[in-house]
Length: 477
Image (cartoon, rainbow, N blue to C red):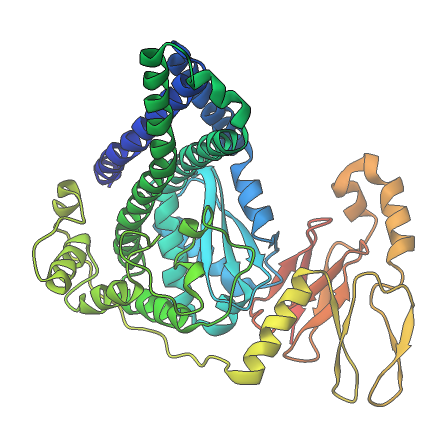
């Protein structure tokens, strides 16, 4: 597998170098046009300075920037236990050294992406729409695909390629705007020395042409890198789950979505498992698409009827394409170990209004809303900034006590014990705690330390750990 990763990186490196040549050529021509006769070398230097600065920022903060731009929020296990279980399973299957952080994006459109500079520091983000629509097998397929990106070292490579593309676009835009609005400088090209003036004018025209074409060419190369890596991530994801139909079915549901993701732009679109910019049904050509055609990806996965190995994926790929084309590096095809396809799980998925309600409840939980059930059966969502200790039920008018009404007082006590550490705080309370569930829906209660805890409908384990004091709390139905 490591040789497979290296070969995949070498092939993408060729495209990456071609993008670098675009950056060098653009920097040279812009510098030569603005600062003749030796400005070309200054332009190359400044181009790489811009790329270097942006790359450093991206390397150390790229994951947090991507998550922030996408509106993703980090969640704990109690918000969606099934998601955490699936990520843990795929982390083990992919042999990752660390558990990725898990984020949820407040969007009804089903999609997901992974980010991070290495397998030790990475994160997986999924939308609320994805969690509400997919079965466990489908969710596992999506997570396996993203884990494959992490294991194959795709994320950092695509980050640097994206930064290079951004540098080319930035330099191009600065130059074109300067050439457009810097009319006063044009007199410099009207020198009495007609030979020198004509040479500079030709250089300016060539620089303008390259400034227009370089971003287009760099973008095509960037998209080509992205598409190449999507195929390998699909193949690796199918191998990790041993169930290609799970990923195929997930991609099918994602492709059927019509919801927009306004927080996504052209720079972040290649990060997602499916192109989020195609929500309105516009069909992009193969060259200008950030991903391979999703219908083709689905057909390839569903053609893998004899096994889930990389060889099986290559055979399915050739069958769909109608000719032999290497999508899996030769080292990957040397692994002849059979990977039998497992049986899928039978599981119902919510649809219609319930699906919309599930999305809303999930995002309220992510945004720290509390869920309280009245004895009349009404479930009430309480915003995090609610200050009252009680409130009347909208249906039966009973007074309902807010579970975190005493949180402020308990918080003051916790602050006074802060220097003693969390272990000291835990010693102040009972050594263990038990909570009895009253419904199968969302429930909220307080830990002994005062920290609010929420249990989702998907919670199915016997205990939960308080994220504030690390206390183990038994959950009984």
